[in-house]
Every structure is written in structure tokens, then in C-alpha cells.
Length: 106
Image 1: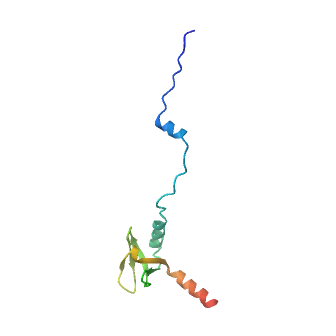
Image 2: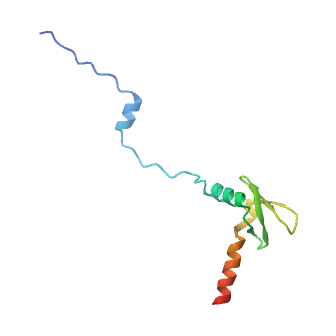
Image 3: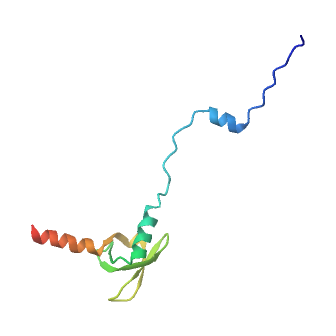
């Protein structure tokens, strides 16, 4: 009986990676939650209140946004381009009305 030589295919880098211990991936840097929120409010033309860092409140609806700014359309004044670093927070105008009703009932 002749000697038989066992032939194994060479391991590719892909095979080696699958054999190594897989580490849990870190969470993504960006969740796209901000994008989803803006798109939803823009599509519905939801009346929004934008509170600036100097406590000034502006009302209107968001027409568009980018990485650094939003465009706020207003019926009671000119449309505004607001840089995001000047915004403290924003919320739906209906939330203001709802909180006033709660305060009056207490």
C-alpha cells in the first residue's frame, strides 16, 4: 500500500477571522434619531418652539436642516436660519398648550 499524503487547503484570512474570538461591537457613532425627528416634523409641518441659548423663544415650522443649522418658517415674521449651536432645545408647540392646561387644573 503506497503512502498517502493528506492534503489540506490553506486557511484563508477569512477563515482565521471566523475562528478568532469575536468581540462585541461598540455602538454606532450616529443613531440617526435627530434625522428621523426632523424629517417627521418637516413632513407634518408641525408647529415648533425653538428656545435659544439667550432664552428667546421662536415659533414656526422646520423647512429644512443640515449638520449645523435649521431653517424655521414663520407666519408672524421673517423666515430664519438658526445655527444649531445657538439652540438650547426645541419642542412641539402643542406641548406648551398641553402643559399650560395641566398647570391651570392643578
